[in-house]
Structure formats: C-alpha cells, structure tokens
Image (cartoon, rainbow, N blue to C red):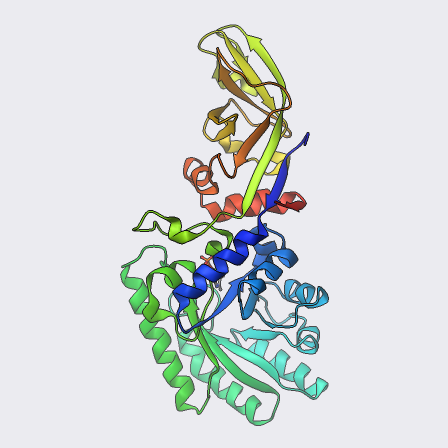
Length: 369
Ligand SMILES: Cc1ncc(COP(=O)(O)O)c(C=O)c1O
C-alpha cells in the first residue's frame, strides 16, 4: 500500500442488518444504499444487506436502482429523488418501486406505465415537516385523488406512503411526534380514498433504534447498516453495530527535525522540540478533509498522532515525538479497527460521520476487508 486504501468489511454490513432487523421487530427492512452505499460500494454493500435479510433496498437516484438491477438484484427496490425528468420507462421496465412527491411526476409515471401496458408501483411521499422531498400537505389530497384515478385505470398501484424525519437523531425532540401525527393524518386520507397500502414507512436509523412505535410496516436505516450509531447507545455497546469501512495509508518517510521547524504549507504547525516527523501518503485528493490539519488523528503502531499542519493534495505529516519506533512502510490507520472512528473525525471537523464515509469512499475504489 503506497497510497490511501479504503476497505469495506461487507460481513459487518450483513451483521448490522441482522442487528437492525431484530430492532425492527415485525417491520421489514429497507437498506438505504444511496450514494454508493454511503461510499461503501453500491453493489457489494447491497448484496451484503440482502444477505442480512434486507427485503428492500432504497436509493435516492434512479440510476442507482437501475445499476442494482443490472448487477442482478431481483428484490424490491425503491427510488425517490427526481423531478419530472425521471427515467420512468426504464424504472418501470426494471420493476423498480417509484416514489412520487408531485402530480407532475405522477403524470409522467402514469403515461409511461400506460405505454408499457403495465401498472407502476408507487409510494406517495408526504412532507410531514422536513420541508424537503414529499408533497406539501396542502396538495396531498389532490395528489391522492389523481393517484386513485390512475390506479382505477390500471396505470399504477399505490403500494406505499412514506415520510422522513427532521430530528430523529435527537430522541424526544417534539418534531418527531408532530411529524408522526401528520403522517398518520396522511395515512388516514389515503385510507379514506380506499387505498390499501402495502407499506407505510417513516423510520431512518435513529428512529429504528429509538422509536419502535414509529416503525410502521418498513424501516429505512442507512448509516447504522454501515456500523455507525446515529445516537449514543445507552448500554455503551454501539447497539452491537460494527463499523464497516477502514481507511489506511502508508508512512512513506520518517525523518528527524530540530525544534522550531515549520511543517507543511504555511507552517501552521511548528515543532516544539527536536522530534521525528512521519509523512503519510494521503491528502485531500483522496478524501482527507483539508480542515483535518492540526485536528484529526491517525493511528500508527498502536499510538495516536495528530496531523501536524496543513493537509496537502496527496500527503500530510504527523509529529511522531522525540522517541518513536515508527519506520517508513508502517501502516497509518485514519479510520478503522485500532484507530479513530469516522465519528471521531466528524467530531473534530464539525461535520457528521455520514460525510466522512461518503468522502473517503466516494473518491477511491474499495477493496473488501
Ligand atoms: C429518505 C431517506 N430514508 C432513510 C434514510 C436513512 O437515514 P439514516 O442514514 O439516518 O438512517 C435517508 C438518508 O438520509 C433518506 O434520505
């Protein structure tokens, strides 16, 4: 390894899905594998989730749903993020469940389903208070009316209704119950129109782990299937989840320097004493946040070392201290067993671990651990 390497323990994803299914109780599980499975590799992560018992896969982008079909996945797949330019024909032909947040999108789906002589499976997405995807409450009735009409004409089957929470990772936040109430009202509107839904779904990872009363028929965990707990486990056991991603690189040069030496561009770090510096082959082109300079830590030979000075495009430096056994060729663990977690990186960078794994995983081909 002479440059940054991202490996994924796909067995951990299978294990995490099994853990989450136990939390889900009677609800089925949709594994959210959008954005290349949060950087973990769309196709292998999806296969690992299926092996753990994920009855559904979910992706934001239609092309990812189609990619899963090309890769041979034959189970239920839901996609949800698009406007009227969605590739409805391809999605219907691929037997993908489609979400619908507007009459414009429903009309496109209906037209393509009619042309194909089949019924598209539709999930109505309701904005219950996130103010993101989902039909506005004021327009829900009209969308449902149009959907009922299309179902009567055989162009769609309305199989689901869903929404997404704004504050699920803050258990007890009043918006959670407020959104759940709006969701129940939306379900009642569907039921009043005679729609017999197969799946009602609201719960992301945090809600899956903390609000069993809001599981409905299907839970949609994402971050937790990659082994990153979205809320602290009161038992201190990370809910039994295992982090799937590891990020490592190599110490490519070790050298002694005097006290008072400036390190890396702009000399943001100055050695306090005669010391040894280690040069790591990984930089912002590989996903190492530039803001990690002087903040994030890496592990080498069982010890933590903070990044010294600025992260460059393809390298950064650590101060190994005056006495060290580190040699060129040693492995530096940025994230992974024995080293920091993605959550630790997120905490010092004032971001969330979702962004950390997406960034590292998005920029590098992944190997299996
Ligand atoms: C619609 C939807 N459902 C579920 C999830 C999974 O959320 P989490 O990763 O917090 O479990 C996401 C991710 O943001 C999402 O966009």
